[in-house]
Image (cartoon, rainbow, N blue to C red; front, side, top):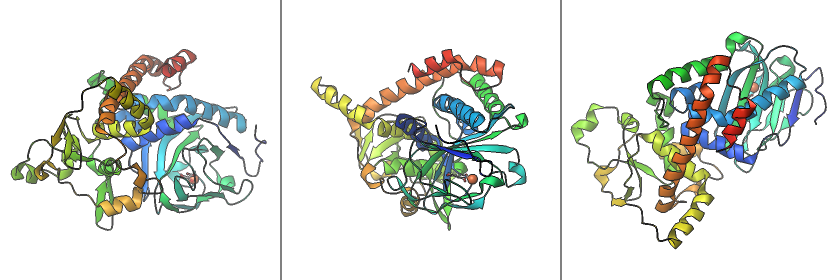
Length: 395
Ligand SMILES: O=C(O)CCC(=O)C(=O)O
Ligand SMILES: [Fe+2]
C-alpha cells in the first residue's frame, strides 16, 4: 500500500492497479469507437457516446475497474460523503497534444469536479514519446505513464499539473472525475440514453455511427476521417462491390458513404462480406488486431482441418470509395513507434475467423448488458452487484 497522501498535495500513485488484458480490451474499444476529442490532437470515447452509438454493451468492461477506482478514491481521501462519477472516458493524445499548468476544476463548468483518477493504458517510450505528467509542487513530481498504473489526486489547486507535448505515438488513458454533486452524476445520463436505445432495437449489437463531423480530424484546411485512418493503419480500405454512378456520388457528401453498407479491401482484393457501415468493419478489424495471436493459431488449426478458403473478389478501381483522406496527416497524427509494423499483419482467413469470434464476443456482452439493465434502471447506478460481476466475467 502506498504512503498516506499529504495534506498539502493530496495524491497517490498506485502501481499495477489493473491488468494488461484490460488495457488491451479498452484499447480495442477506443480504436473501434473513438471520436475526435475536445482538444487539438485528442481522441475520446465516453460512456454516453458508447450508449448513443448502440455500443452500450462496451460499458460493461469498464465497470469493475470504475467501482474499484471509486473505492480507492474514497479510501485515499477518507470521504465520509457520497461520491458520484462525473465523467468516464478513454482519451488518447497524439502528436502535438499537451496541456499547461492547471487544476482540473479550474473552469466555471468544471467546479463540480472533486477528484481525478488517471489510469494509464500504455507505456511511455514504448507506445509513445513525450507526454510525461508533472505536478508543480510535492511528490511524486513527475509520472511516466506505465500500463496498469493509476494516479489519483484532488481536482483543486493543491494539485496543479501539466502534461508535456506528445512527440509521436498515441498516449492512451482511462480518465475519471468524481463529484459530490449528484446533479452531475454520469450514471443517470448514460442509463437514460441506454433505455431509449434499447426500446428501438433491443437485440442489435451492431454499431451505428454518430454524425460524420465527430470522426473528422481537421488541420490547416486538410483532414481525415479517424475510422478510415484506423482501417488503413491495419492495411485495409473500404470498398463498394457495385460501381457507383457519378450522379450518385455527386449527390451526397462522400463521407456519408461511411454510414452505409460497405466491404473491406486490401490492395486489389475484396472480402465478400457486407458490413453494415464503416464502424462495424472497423470494430471487426480492431478485434482481429486485439486477438491476432489467437486467430493465427485458429488459422493453423483450420489448415489442418482443410477449412474452405475465404471468398475474395478482384477489385477494379471503380469499386474504391472515393473519400477525402490526407494520408500523410493521418500518419503524422496517429502514426508512431508501433504503426508501421501493424500493416498487413493478418491473412484473409484470420479476418473470416475474427468475424465469427467478434460476433461471439459482442453478442455475449450484449446479453450480459440486457441482464444488467433492469437493476441499472431501478438503482439509477451502473454499478455491478457481485452476482452480475461473476456473470460479466463468465464470457
Ligand atoms: O492524462 C494525464 O496524465 C492527465 C491529463 C489532464 O491533466 C487532464 O485531462 O486534465
Ligand atoms: Fe488535468
